[in-house]
Length: 131
Image (cartoon, rainbow, N blue to C red; front, side):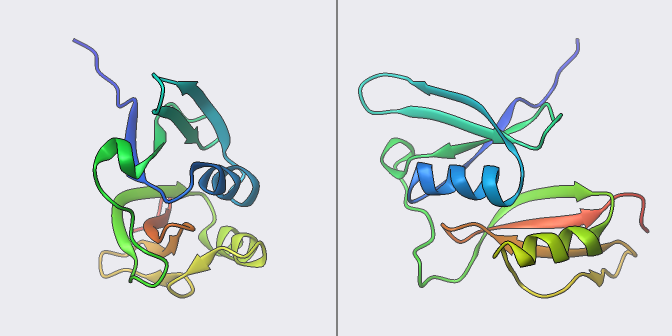
């Protein structure tokens, strides 16, 4: 039996703000955008060419709140791969993406760092083929 991961969900304060962040700053693509009833908007984004998407979930639908603007970052548990961590870091930093710091070598040998979205969800970004 074959299986694949379709999506994972993060809760965001504002779906349109999150959409702009992922599409305009990170260079991802909007994957699905559909009303699923009178209140729920099913909105997903993914890196260009990827199969797995991130659902930009509404707090009222998922019955929880995203981290507040003054809260510390909340770990999304999502890892993102890049083929050049230093170039990706510099490019995204220039676009205004917030990082915890520059890429560093992790104890297991990979070079990586963390960034956050406008709702303070944090993401681990790591260079492929390291370590």
